[in-house]
Amino acid sequence: QVKFVESGGGVVQPGASLRPSCVASGISFCHYPMGCFRQALGKHREWVASFTRGGDTTYVDFVRGRFAISRDNAEKTVYLQMDSLKPEDTAVYYCTALSTTRIPINRNYWGQGTQVTVSA
Image 1 (tube, rainbow, N blue to C red):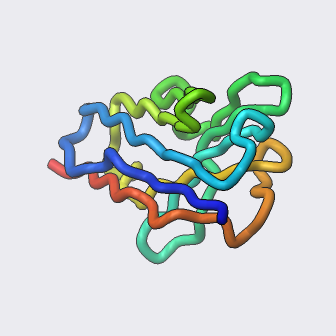
Image 2 (tube, helix red, strand yellow; image 1 turned 30 degrees about the vertical axis):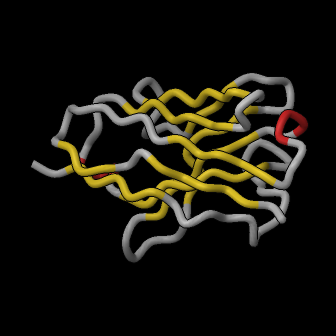
């Protein structure tokens, strides 16, 4: 059974940092590019950051320079370092395994997500 468990979100002030993580199970973790997505209240889920099949990292424009995705293959864990957080970053954050840079291997492979709230 494929499973993703996200944690590490929280409520922070603008300009603060968070480092949510996502633990995967039930997949050959090291074989897949992994990606992070987010869904704000009332909006569709959107891609935020991911690894390419070549091992590089890529980011959506509005987080580039502020967020950094990393992975620990031994722990089957993805991390998303989030710096200089803005109120518009408020959303539920997810990770999943990808077939290509932004496309999940299965549209049903989502965890419960972790809530990030940025508010003064």
